[in-house]
Image (cartoon, rainbow, N blue to C red; front, side, top):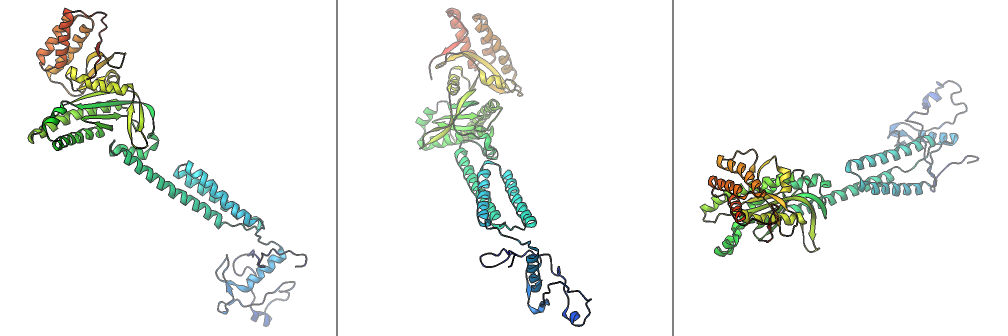
Length: 468
């Protein structure tokens, strides 16, 4: 238009830079003009728009400033834009910019969101959206440049919503996977711990300091010969239910039932600083439950059940072991094999629960322990001390049992120093107090043998080189 450039779009339309709400431009009544009630010069050098502004006339439009905006004042705004040249422009490159903004904002969120927590994700998305809105507003207010704000923000919000929904579905799927994987291994409380803090759960093989327990029923094969299979299964199921409850109650992980043997670990998959103590507590609780179960079985004609338990602590390989067809969460290593050997040693010493010196060092102040012997088991060159798990440290023992616990270590020290006659006397005294104490009987018999046939190259270690 002459020397002026009016930035219209392809359809000849113009973006109006409104000056304000209705009556930003002066309004004069036609009756005042015709009646001569306006001062002279009111319209000098002015562009006058003549039109209807009454609501009933119908020339009313909706604008960003008001839903009731006189049509003539819109014309005045356009003319003022042309005179001042301060148009609102939508640059030619705005479409490319809008598309780029949609792609860029969505990409930033798509890359960042999976790598950060949910709370940080909300803050990042809110920050990006806020920055874009402020930038678009400043360009609009200061440079009269109109860039699309809705679509980039919509793209940002849509990406965030979809990723959040995907994350929720994926996490729920992972939670279900964890529950399905471990519901037969650990208690519900441990599963909730894993779900609330997944960082504590590390699937796959890793070396960890753990405690492993083996508990095997004594003479159950003979029961299998006397009772029909359905009765055997019922007895075994009731027994395993009670024993597994005690493992779970002490935050242990059940790894396997092997015939009439139970295997459990403590300290994985969730970290457990006092794993050795938990294993010993579970063993004592299982012993008590076997006593209660024996009373219940006696009432219905079932045989009492006895078990031998071995516990050892050490560094083991823990994780999912198996193939793509079937796997199990279990532990492997020399310390696992040692726990199995300790369980078998109960048969020789006539005890219920034997723990290794590694476990004993971790629970000394919490339990009453009796050092039984120093042994070298099959498959290991290094000798170790073995202990009987007697009971909780705060439980007072009957006088005879307490005296045996005091006398046995003295007798064992004399035995290791090859004072076999002296050791025999003390072990015999233990048998006078407790005739059923099989460790004392075993050591007394050994002292008699060594008194008559002194061993050569004595190191105080007894070798158990057979696997029972």
